[in-house]
Amino acid sequence: MSAPAPAESPYERLLDLVDRLASDPDLPINADTERTLEQITIEALADHSIDRELHLRDVVRWLVALVHGHRAVRVSHPEVDGDEEIALMRVLITRWLHPARRDA
Image 1 (spheres, rainbow, N blue to C red):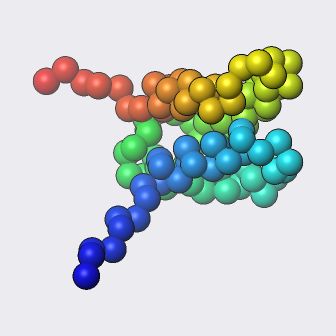
Image 2 (cartoon, rainbow, N blue to C red):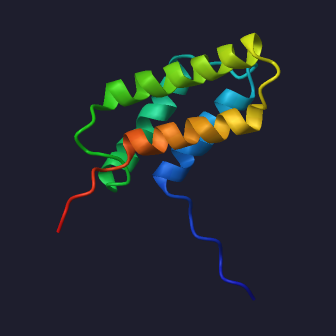
Image 3 (tube, one colour):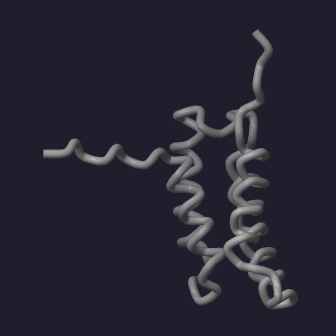
């Protein structure tokens, strides 16, 4: 019998939600979406997987803006591979949200 898969971290859930929203332009981005992003961001801040110096509402607003930006790029540049663009967006998000490294 194999061990149960570990639960996804809040950070992984946040990236997964952003991926789904960016991949499917038919998914709505509304107040419910923002509340879900906010709740996951609160959890990620609490477990220190994202920089605690960032402000919650700013993080949510900019995640939504990045998703809207990705959707716009896909419309205006259909020649660009969507999966590659999502991968790039994940890198940008990770570098932005990751806690600052402290020298020992």
